[in-house]
Amino acid sequence: MRVLIAAGGTAGHINPALAIAGALRRADPAAEIHFAGRREGMEYGLVTRAGYPFHHIEINGFQRRLTPENIRRNLAALWHLALSGPRTQAILKQVQPDLVIGCGGYVSGPVVRAAARRGIKTAIHEQNAFPGVTNKLLAKDVDVVFAASADAVQKLGAPGKTLVVGNPVRPELFTQDRAAARARLGVKDRTVILSFGGSLGARRINEVVAALCGWEQRTRQPILHLHATGSRGVQLFKDLAAQHGFAPGPDLVVQEYINNMPELLAAADLVIARSGALTLAELEAMGRASILIPSPNVAENHQYYNALELQNAGAAVVIEEKDLTGDRLVETVQALLAEPGRLTEMGRCARTLAVPDSLDRITARLLELVRTGR
Image (cartoon, rainbow, N blue to C red; front, side, top):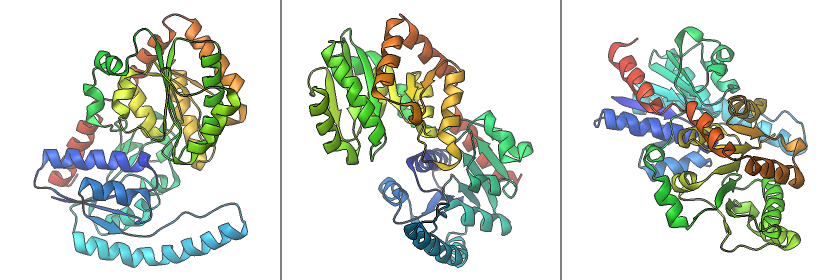
């Protein structure tokens, strides 16, 4: 079986794609799995480090706000779009896949559409409650549509062939030992707060978390706070620490990036983060309470709709960035900590949303599709 997976743009697209690739390889060790994506994008490094063949195709989205810089970007996008057809055909000819899977990002569009027109079996996976434009356009052409959320089914426009399967997450999330993880961190009887804003860092999250850290240290809260600044937030957070009068120490661990996320999620009582689909799937898998701050800079405001699902289930508190201040975050944390058992109950609600067999469901349907052609 030869499989071509197209995914790009963000870790929320690429990591589910890698999880699906790993599951297919475990189900069929002889499977030959290839990836298509942008060499300049995040996907190139993640995919090649995982050991899969990578096929470069350059395609970009169009910018709606017309500035001189965005006009230049749109001209480049038009050029790459014109070249994407021939490049896609060359990749399909080289790989000769039995199955093509799109996991999101602009790159999925031309690759999956061309495969469907050739009669190759195709599938897409939509990670968000509010689907992206690319997947909404592709849904009518592919053989199988996988949706992470029931809320996405009607929006995708192909309910008859859409399966709700959740978001596949790293298998090691389900094998973490919470007591052992907390013991390694020396938690004792403290509440563990984990906060982050992505690999690059989100300036607003760094700003309000700094206010929270200042409150924690001034009032001597029994909290162990673990915070990742992101690469662009390292110096910013140092400056904010001086401004708010706090410093890293036994109760505050600050680092640029989290390399052991499964272990830290296992130890955490409360997570403060954006609401990308992958983050939420991991919170659900681990059963963790959260304060979610949707990014306002994403297509169709999909992070807000993702976050609402957890809030409506009693698993999270959602604060939109336009309403976010340091005082608001402190008040929210203070209220959650003041109610005994609240974080535990929120975590239990999050766990009810998890789909622990997501990868099994996806893999079984893909193998059936290749085997039977249906």
